[in-house]
Image 1: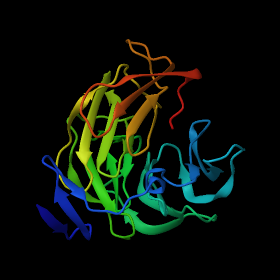
Image 2: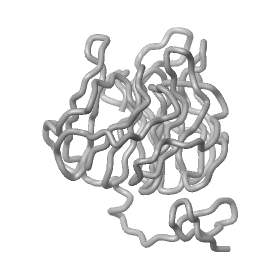
Image 3: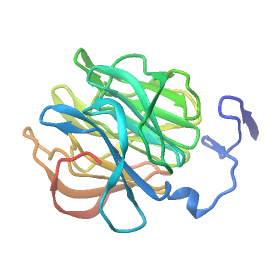
Length: 269
């Protein structure tokens, strides 16, 4: 069965379990592009407004990209190959936008989340950008919201997570969004949720991580695998983990051991 998704302006087909985009494909579309971006971050308890970039297909140091419109300590970030969005913070619900292939300061196009939010998972494909979970000084969220990447309209409701949690890690393939781990007061969790990016609805259970990873875990992916590393170690007192684990995004199941990082790390990726 085929359908035309008017929200995404995409032709889709039913693969037996979910709707999938009908697209032309190449290995380049799966790489995420050739630039890596760092935006904002902690600075002795406050935020930063710096944006830096690196060429992901070569070695070398980061270079200056420009500045955010405001300091952001723990924003929620997501990108297509063209645009990058840096959303929210401890007392902010707005979004900065950059063009990844260029350099320069971020712009505020008036894109707002439903409220102030930080420490959530950022997920995206070429059409949609999604934030899942997170918190503000009033408490944590289980809500999922999305925007159309090229639009200046505000975030709208997508659905709910299975738990109210923050300090989650997000990654995605062109079809699925993955939300790994997190903090559910007063406990750290190893659960993995997933959503189908092109639809709307609540998240579903994917499986479990080997470790409880929060705060500040690193999560990354290509179109096939998602990896988690660093962050809080198992047990009642969090430490830093040097272990790396992976999932295959198109399937369901628990994470498996990938290997070890060169050192313990609690920095979010």
